[in-house]
Amino acid sequence: MRGGHSPFKPRLRRSWRAPGELLNFTLYFLCAVLLVLSRIGHGAVVDARDRFIDLTAPLLEAASAPVIMGRHGLARVRSYVGIVSEIDRLKAENEELKQWEWRAKLLERNVAHLRSLLNAVDEPALHFVTGSVIADARGPFLRSALINLGRDDGVRIGYAVINGDGLVGRTVDAGASVTRVLLLNDLNSRIPVLVGAAGVRALASGDNSGELKLEFFPDGASPHSGDEVYTSGADGVLPRGLRVGAVTGSPGALKVRPHAELSSLDVVSVLFFDTPALTRTDPPAVPVAGPLSPAPDDAQAPPPTPTASAEPLPADATVKHVGTADGASPGAGVAQAQP
Amino acid sequence: MTAALPILSVLFAVLATAIPWGLPADATFILPLVVVMMVFCWRALPGTFLPPYLAMLLGLLTDIMSGGPLGFWALMALIASTAAGRVPPLADGQDRNQLWLVWAGVAAVIASLGWLLASLYFVRWIDWWPIGFGALVSVALFPVVLHGVLWIRRGKLRTGQTLYGRWS
Image (cartoon, rainbow over the protein chains, first blue to last red):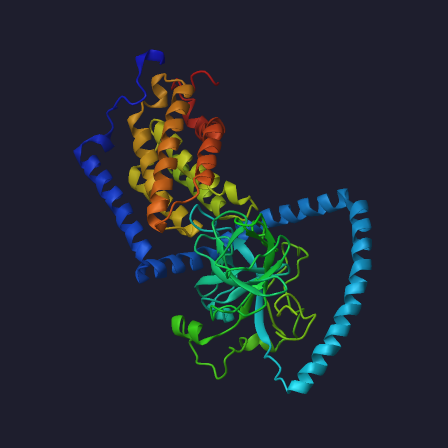
């Protein structure tokens, strides 16, 4: 303690005179009020936040661009470093995939034959729109991301968000040009899922860590490590069959490791999947005729690849396109039912 | 312009909290705590303009950017601002280790209060590790942030004030 000072010795500052203390008390009180309003989800608070995020979106997008470019550069350097072993791995994987391709074609023929016998109606295609992550809004309470798509692009609250690896989350706030995506590992995320080939029903809950907790499976069911997990669609919000992840951990403490790398998202697609539950909570501005909302007007552009590419795009690329993903036909991407 | 330096530098830090750095899930507390730490450092410097209401507003901005509950980081910034207002200003000959020690205490209070508040907010016990880890990292980063803040103010502080104690 040089100079005999105590670290907490009060010093004469204007803010510690009586009006200053009153102001301080008012500020603390205001924080408490804001926390309560935020907890109850007051409409004014939500609207104000959405408007502010919409206003700051261009700034966030500009500020994020160099960082995303740097991350891509780093990823490229890493891939160059391990390119020889990567080629060997890809060759082996290619051999294995050729066998899978043959099996897939066989199954496709069988499914088509069975569907024709049953007079099954084809599932309607899912429209989607693709954009990029502009801000990493992952606070202590929330694992979310802001994307450069909004209501102007046809996005509404509750839509599923995917990338090339699988389900990423769902939209929770939608402004005119920016949308907040609640990631799978958020504390408030609950996804009804099917586990393994048997399709055991369970619930995958986020806990703010990198993995999801797997809970509420039926008595007698025993999911194994490595089992695939995909959405069941039981919540009436998410489409059935979106890839979520794979089971990890030991019995009694099973977890799901998401296929999507949630901490470094770049390009994501929003699936337009309207259900009665969704229409009640966030009615569309213009009522739609069918159960699936049409893509926005500019959807007439030639459809791109049906899913967001896992390959990193150049940072300066404008990633905003619309297309359709067939929910039934195999090979149409990750946003389809598991066989 | 010099008077606006504290606000502008903290605003820059707030913006940095929203950029997709690709940090792991355990590291999400670090960047917002850097914002709070900057508020603390600026408030501990004499003659800087960063009153508590502006500290709160900057915290509120962090809340908006992070998508978390409004008022959480505003409260943390306010606590840091109040604590920094209670310590003798750095210009009084106080060495930086003392300020570092105070920040360690403030970080511990913020981490404990933040964890408790988060648990109350969500009505369940929140995992304490990310916030604890964030507080530890913030204590480790304190000299770097203080150096940064002093670097920003260097021009003004060289004009006769005896600052920086041992680390110069």
